[in-house]
Structure formats: structure tokens, C-alpha cells
Amino acid sequence: MESDTTIYSKDEKLWATLCHLSALVGFVFPFGNIIGPLMFWIIRKDQMPLVDVNGKEAVNFQISMTIYVIIAAFLVFVLIGIPLLIILALSDLILIIMASVKTSEGTPFRYPLTIRLIK
Image (cartoon, rainbow, N blue to C red; front, side, top):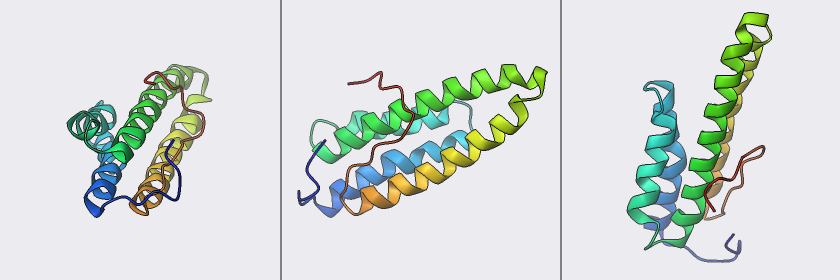
């Protein structure tokens, strides 16, 4: 991760923040939570280090959340899945907002419980 003392341009902070916020599309379109951050990351990862770090983090987190939701969906049949799906949706929303705020300040954000598939 980049140092917290690094000065980033407004444009770079905006693109990095959009990497996180674009995951909200997943609440409307299936797999939009992965496609949104992936698009922003791919477009600017080579030009902007903050976007590279936060884009990878956002994509990895959204892939992880998708895996957790699929597991919870199967657990609906034993009733534990319903509260798990609610908890996952709320956690996703809250963490996206937290990541967006931190990133807009120029601080790289690390999501908890993320399977880091993209290094």
C-alpha cells in the first residue's frame, strides 16, 4: 500500500473513490458489484497508483462478498442464510461507504475478511 503521507491529485482521489462507489451497482444489477470496480480499475490502474491499490482492493472485496452471498443463499434452506444475507448486505453497504470516504481523503483502504485473489 501507498504511504498515508503521499499527496494525490483530486482526479486520482475521484477515480479511486469511484472504484469503491461503483460496487453499489450490484444492489441493482447482478454482478454489477464486481463489474463496476473492475472497469474503473482497468481504465486507470496504470496511470494512477491510488486507483491501482484501491481498485484491486475493491474488486477483491466484491468477489469475496459474492462468494459469501452464494454460500449464505444455500444456507437459506436451513434458515441461517436469511440473517446472514441481511448482515452481508448491510456490511457491504457500510464498508463501501467507509472505503469511499477514506479514499476521497487520499488514504488507501483495506477491507476486512477479503480474499485477495488479485495481487
